[in-house]
Length: 143
Length: 142
Image (cartoon, each protein chain N blue to C red):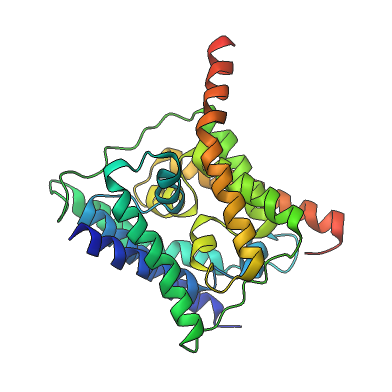
């Protein structure tokens, strides 16, 4: 059951990214290009995605997942160095190429060599994160 | 092209539905970087089979629509290896340090009014805007 739900969610996520144009880097960089020919599409995608999700969060109250033991805990409110540094790095990489993790995977089948190079580099960055995170924590501890 | 926002809204609703199904069904947050990253650093643990299934469907469905359907999309990604590698490394490292990306912090975080999700989204959009402006200034275009 959990596997089936994961496949349905992954497939729908890919379909939504594909149909919305978010696997086209021109659209994403166009959204970030507020000083040029701004493309607002991404704002509609995010707005459209937030609506059903806001309803879903309401539905979690006082219930259990259909095929799970519990819902995610309440989110932390702590604004950490990791959150800020990580988000800045992510934004820089996102601006440089116009791909974020979801679309990088969704477009793998038709993105050719550039898509593969980006995805491999992204996975290397992900694998390196626990190390970098330790270094950041050590700095914080000694400061 | 004029209707791109309508496709955006439609695709966005599908993405939100996908995230809702994963949350209400499996009790999981649909974060692309968390699901892929968890597989790479071993934090997915017992959920690894679900994560693999999710990623496989996420890759297969758009490819099917691209090759079999009429909805063809070109990614228009840069051919520059330097940009691709630097961008990929930064996105991979950054999303794991921040514990989320556009789907996790953006869609799933903002929809529950998570302060971390909102702050992260403002920061990465700001950094992305600055980067694109910088690229434009340096290269005279994208």
